[in-house]
Image (cartoon, rainbow, N blue to C red; front, side, top):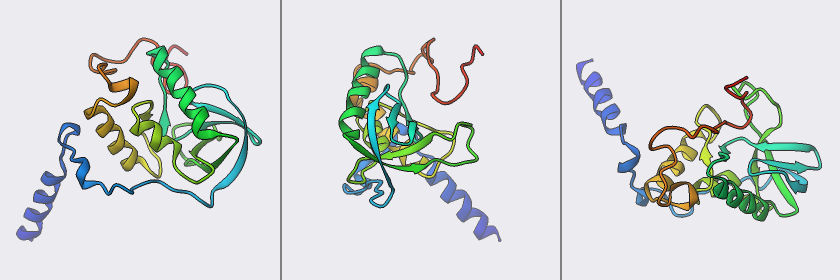
Length: 179
């Protein structure tokens, strides 16, 4: 029993790695979230950096979100979402029992099945949703690597949350704090 306890403690200690200690060489280069058989929907328009109007109505990204500040970064994320969305998206429903109460949150994939949230987070254009979800661990890891490598407009020469959240910060899909 003592040996088992020591093994558990040693394993737990080894797993405590901060974002600054992440070694991206440990991640296979071809590691991607793919969903080639997810439902395909037509894209009518990209409403904002988090929301797409589709043939089934407005849908929001589940695994990632874009903050409104800095505004130029939100605009860049919207342009990238538009590029990745094209004329059709593959979608996968986010968890039903989530803290996000609206049913219109989906994981978004390109028509070819590549994760849009994964791309936006890796490129430093979006933050990982850290409360729940099927791909939670992977997206948080990608977020930490993007932050460490100062990728994209969120992290390049601008540590968005180094001194706390911007006043306009709001997580899409959750009620505004002022409400």
